[in-house]
Length: 438
Image 1: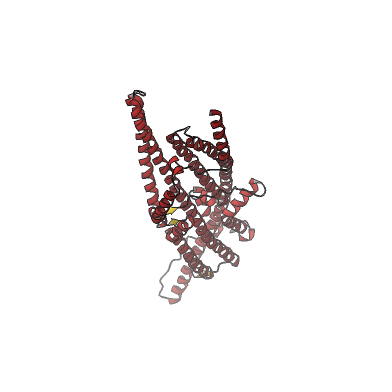
Image 2: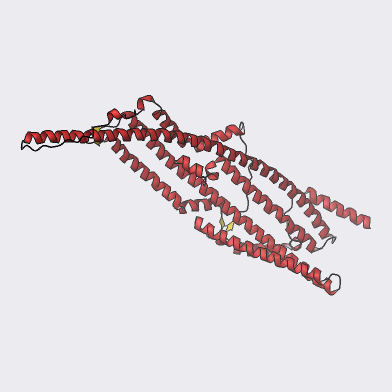
């Protein structure tokens, strides 16, 4: 009889395993009647909260963003400023009483720079929207994961409390000591303290999310599904990262190249102002002899004296501006090249971390499949009274850790993938990024 029973159990376990994955449920949930299930489902549908999707949250955050609103104003103001600067370029500079028009090639340079600056401001708005999208995504998934962790913790406390009640009976029967019982009580107390911390952390996250999106997530249910799409590239990783960086810094690169071409051109060189160009310090003196013509002559010489000095100061300022522009262009080129190297190394590190996470995710998936098979076996054992309900439920609750770990790993994977594809997300707080974009 025992052999026959063992054979039946073995067959039941085998059928359970080959039937595929299972959804972890408590033992009590496996023996509910269909009528009871219908009653519970109806009650849940009556109390269900509307679903707030990630896409809806992102859209709400974009509509709620003061940063994006500021970016839009910057675009408008930059366009207006460019119009004013164009008029300034068209208006000759007055040096004393001499009008000096801006050379056409310098006008062209300034016009090109203004166009690039406007494109850069528009690009910054796109970058800020991408950063906001990732910020909302991270916050959304963090809340979901926290909710899952809290639910798991509550189930764990419930089971540990049942274990404590059993332990009290055992203690009364002399099967365990007072110390053993105290150890169980302390474990439950520790779990409750951790649960309270998790709930406070979740509350803070929900408050921050409301500021970010204007949505109170306590009034909604959040989606728990999370996509895992493997990151793939065509060609070498070096080539891919170079292309990504060029796209990120394309306008900074264009500004450097534009200024470099202009100021390295000998036709645009502003020659040094020699001592021979310096005007005389001998200021004209008026000898009042009562002759009006003498005064006119004096006034003409005085005007010429000031004109020469203002023209000399103008030449010095132009020479100084030229030297500063050349040095600034050289410095910008060096900073840009260094930034590209540093960013690429950081992206390479992210890529390495991404590959490691991918391996972890694949391992977690295998562990979940194995765990599901183990739960299938445990369910059959429970049904045949080979293990207790408490033992089975403990296995179910412990299995939820794997689900939470997998979701956390996929969320981190997706974040790093976005940071590689859109480095302005990863480098948004980088000082180098700010300096080369200015």
